[in-house]
Length: 195
Ligand SMILES: CC(C)(COP(=O)(O)OP(=O)(O)OC[C@H]1O[C@@H](n2cnc3c(N)ncnc32)[C@H](O)[C@@H]1O)[C@@H](O)C(=O)NCCC(=O)NCCS
Ligand SMILES: Nc1ncnc2c1ncn2[C@@H]1O[C@H](COP(=O)(O)OP(=O)(O)OP(=O)(O)O)[C@@H](O)[C@H]1O
Image (cartoon, rainbow, N blue to C red; front, top):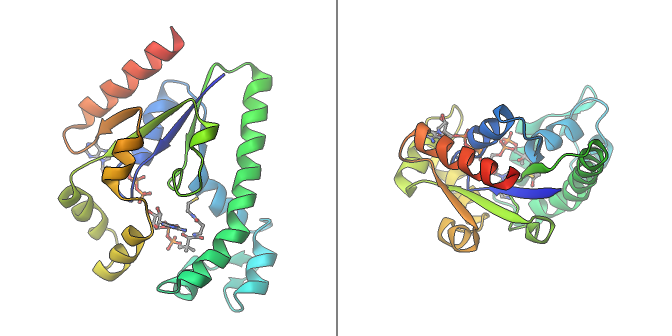
């Protein structure tokens, strides 16, 4: 089974690329969705987060806005949160891979925003990085409700720079051009991998 790692900075087009893979019937593990599930009702991260960040859990689930306020601008607090969340995400990923192997899948995608930051490269046969010019990235992200210059700056400072991601990629998918070009690049990759 071949494992493709899909990553890219905030707003570069990961989710859109992941959906293109899904439409081609490639199973995708979505690390962000896994975090949401872990922090939602009944999720395994809820109790440890309640203990580490008092006041951020309400009605059995994490209030992400409160949690964001608790870690934004506080690198040590974010590291504490990551130490809780990342091993649990890794666990979910392991279960996804084991299930895919059992089903006899030939190709799967791990959609992981922090693939490089969490040293996930070794678990992938090939790394796909989605990228766009910095101005396009900024424009996309700043349009989102609740996003501010300050928040974006802080997030970017915490992510491996785009040029470094591009350097470490096996395949680059440019999303600043057209939707069609990006889809074509992914279709080609899937076709070649399946051949
Ligand atoms: C801090 C939290 C509660 C903020 O939630 P919120 O819904 O406001 O934002 P969201 O999760 O959509 O993140 C916004 C952007 O920040 C980036 N980001 C999130 N966490 C991190 C991090 N630890 N390091 C760098 N960038 C991050 C993401 O790429 C995303 O593009 C949430 O991001 C969280 O629980 N993060 C810790 C877990 C983690 O590392 N997640 C990253 C994906 S595996
Ligand atoms: N190939 C493309 N061409 C044009 N626009 C695109 C393309 N890919 C993505 N976009 C647009 O860019 C924006 C960000 O895309 P997306 O949500 O996929 O990014 P992301 O990397 O998953 O973001 P985040 O890291 O914040 O979760 C969306 O508005 C999306 O419609």
